[in-house]
Image (cartoon, rainbow, N blue to C red; front, side):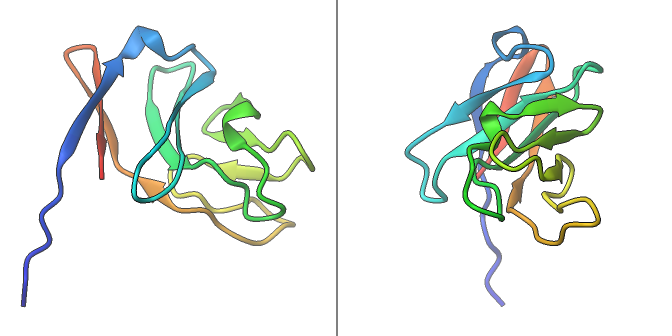
Length: 107
């Protein structure tokens, strides 16, 4: 069995992501990735595409640990990319972490 190597990439300082906002990482092999910051300074990363109609989740409203898509108000959980009921679907999530005030993204 081959072990998959994962790499942590430095993204930015935590304060460069607005509280209850996001920053988009473009040009990755996985497409655009939205990195969100909650009011508790937790950081999450998900594919910047709503599973419903492809809306830009990075432009949505962050509340708690979810984001509401700006197009049709689907709510997506930031931790795992799953859509909240009654809707069904998911978008890919990526590991993110904060160390010493710096945000890292695992690709």
